[in-house]
Length: 386
Image (cartoon, rainbow, N blue to C red; front, side):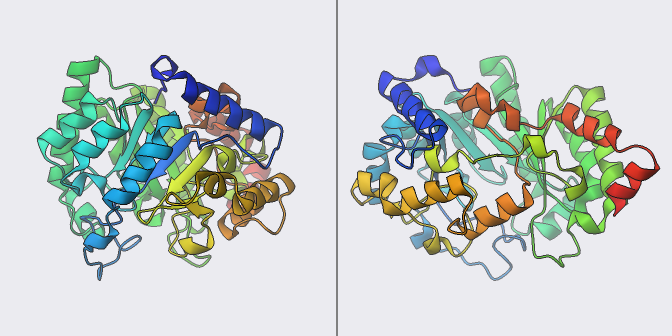
C-alpha cells in the first residue's frame, strides 16, 4: 500500500505533521484530529466463523453504523485523515450502500483500505474498490474448499475465488500492476492451517498477488491451535514460506512473532504510535486509540464518541491518560496494550507508509530468514524447540 501524499490537502499534511511531532516529543496532547481512521461500518458478517462470530450469530441491522454517525465522521474526522480503513468487524461489502460510503470517504484523497473475505459483493461493488484504488487485504487462512467452508460457514469458497479473480483482473486493467493494491493476509496462522500455507502461496501465484502477510493466532494460553504447541511444524512451514517467497517473488511480511523464540526484539515497538495517530471508531461511534482494540469489552477502551465535542473525544483526559501510560509503560495501559508490551510481539503493518522512520518496526522475509539462520546448530535448535 502507498499513500499518495500529492493527493492530500495542506490541512491533512499539517495534521499528520502535528501528530508525528506530538508522538516524537511524547506530548499527551496529539494533533487536532487522528491521522488514520479505522471505521466499523458494520459488525454484521456473512460468515459464522467459530473464532469470530460463532455458529449462533444472527444478523442485526442495529449493528450497522447509522447515518448520523457516518455524517459526524465525514464532517469532523475524515477531511483530516491520510488513511481510512473501512473494514468493519464483519464484512463491509455486504452493505447495500457500501459504494456510496466509499465514494464519500474517498473525496479528500486519503488512502483507502479494506480487510475483507471477498465472500460477497456485486461486481459493481467490487469494481468500485478498483476505481477508488482501495488497498485490499484478503483474509485467507485456508486454501481448500471443503476445509474453508467447514471452518468459515456461511462463506462460499468458489465465490471468494471468483471475486478474487475479478478484482485482480480489473486492477491490472486499470492500474497496470497489483503491487501495492492487494495482498493476502494469512492470519491467523495456527495449528489447524499450517499445512495450508504452501497452498495459499499457490493461490497467490495463480492470481499474481505480490504480497502475503502472516500473523499467528493469539488466544487463551491452552488453546491447542496456538503455534507454541506445534513448534517443529511451524519451523518447517516458515522455511517453506521463505523458500516460496523467493521462488515466486512474493513479498512476505510478518505481523508479529510466530514463536516467542523467534522474536526480533529490535523490531518491536519501543513506544506504540497508535494512540497519537490512529482512531478506531466502532459502529456506535465510540473511539478507541488503536485499530487492534476489537475485543468484545470495547466500552472499557473508549476515549470518546464522534458525537462528542472533538477536542474532548480525541485529546480529552481519557486519551491523554492512554498516551501517558504508553510513554511510561505503566499499569494504566489498556489490558490488550499491557499484553502487547509484555510479550513484545507486534511488528509494523502500514505505519512505515505514514512515516518512513517506522520502517524500523517492519519484519520482512529477509529479517525472518536471518532470525532462523542465526538459530541453526544444536543450541539454537534447542532454543527454538524449548
